Length: 161
Image 1 (cartoon, one colour):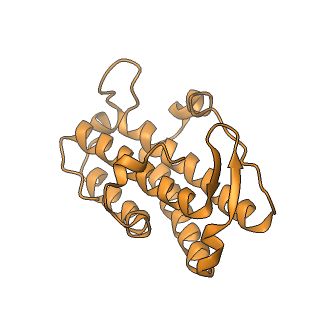
Image 2: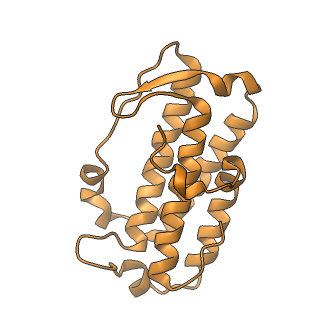
């Protein structure tokens, strides 16, 4: 199950995950610190916090992708994003974006080296059930689009991915 499937619409998930770092950089490049730190509503993440979350989740995806390919019948380790976010005040937006971009580049290289049949390999997510590696990639793309739209809304820009 991909909780972000609707965000992909008809987009190719591989194209989305490849485009996201540049799209995010374009959106935040000209933003001042106040805009990056502004929360759109009480309890909602700022752009800086969203970028930090994207960096964290890309590290998680890196581990999940590799574990899922390397292990037979892998069970994904879930994490509580809100507990991870408890320390997001320690991070700046541009370091988060650089981290996301570097790990994303690493993940794309990994995925690009895999033979097509590997994307049908299954794993189990304790909260979402059985899924394939392809669904994980689709989740990455939908997750990207969801957060890119949030960032665009906060900064008053159009999301292009």
